[in-house]
Image (tube, rainbow, N blue to C red; front, side):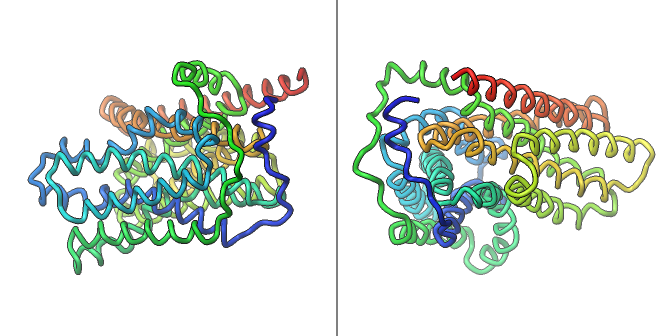
Length: 403
């Protein structure tokens, strides 16, 4: 291993600081609300700005596009910045931007704040999980990462649960102001609860070396495999949460509420299973294989006209399990914080790619093939995820034996 990476590896943590882990997780939840607040208030924002759905769609997707383009870059520079400093910068910037949004700026300025929110969100999702792993004892690390991996689902669930009440009483500006206050509060919590970065850090990578460093991340299984598996998770999860309720008939209202919660349960339980029963690599393979089988069962129900709710709930649980196990691969494949930061950067980049490509693929397939258009892309993504996990872990272990 490079000497610089070894010098950055902290002494192994023998105890888990759960208040610190919870604080870091809440930072992730608040960062994910940069997506959920606009998704929830989409129509209110459209009405307030007199914008077309397409224009507001760009406002929504800009944050994810930043992660898609710069996810790996932030993972590369994180060790030079320091993980706590990067997290504080992301949370502080996010608080300021949400405050600016609450003042109802013109639409071009609103888009600009969303662009910088993408930078804020990316800083948090690279720094926070790396710190979670640093402050978790080995016996709790998979559990802590299982908790972390629920942050997006929890953000959407909390926004859906409380956003209507805030909008009704404090209008759109109040909803955005609540987010600003939450970001600022968690920034203060990090200041008090998370220890400062050490004095030594890696040097900044040279600008000319970034393409080579990007290529190195995707040529090493320890940094590429978690992101690759996470791509197949995000490509399926968001599309299923959108399209499955449309085929649920009379069960649609309650199923639309329950499916995200079941997915969160699957994501969180991945940490417990990986910690005590099965290695993350095996869990990823089993979860994707289960998704493929549940997808076939969903197709059978749709073909025979049977109620899909039981199968749909199982399917979303298994999809969540695959996502949580993908995050669990990060500490499983490497104990070094610098390597873990690069892996989280790849997860951010490929996760955004999956969430960008997945829904259009499912939409086009359902338009062409009807109900089975929901099943076939799911089978493809699940089987590819299972194959990638199998090949990747086997080749990673072979590389370790050679070194």
